[in-house]
Image (tube, rainbow, N blue to C red; front, side, top):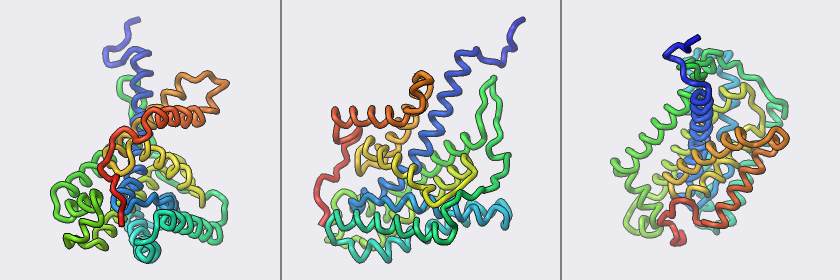
Length: 306
């Protein structure tokens, strides 16, 4: 019996299916990595509290889904996480901005554990189920390939946000100031750039990316707990280093490479080793760092921030 002309061959179907999964996972990693890379580019700060922005976005969605109309979920979650990111910058990081890199790093850990423990005290450590409508994760069948609407949305939102960020950085005055601050923070301040505004804007964008990552992650898993953002920020951190610290292009590229590598290993590893997929991923990343410790793209941030 002849196969209908609109159906692809089984091998091609499997290849495209895994390619779609890799791009979708890479888009999620890229979203998380860009939030970290933005802050590092301006402040030379690895903000591990970014994971708690994702966690707060997840809990915000937990409260909103049963109580508010669907069209309010996305803007309200974005606003909540955005306000938290700006508050984090103003209350925690701004007072220690001129301190050493170690102090900034410890501050980020302190904020991370503070927010996480507040979530445990108020929400307990048990996972909470979020009733995301099934329409979001329902599949679309194209030529025998199952693509969920969430995969399409994840890729589309990632491209949209990266495009908006690129336009902002290259076509607006504040965006050019952010790029100048990333190049040489001390010289940018000498030239009269408003450091407070530039850094606050970087945290604002970081909050937007964190909120978007939270929406995607909740839609994928359907649950949220106080450690909700820990694993994503770990992978985002690895993707950021893989792409080259301080490079936004590198962070996005690193996210996609990490996503592709994860899906490929899931495909080629024997069943007895499939449970060790993540360990193999990190081992491959270590081998890459040994060969190229500066990452894929070397950003012009080698001068120390004063």
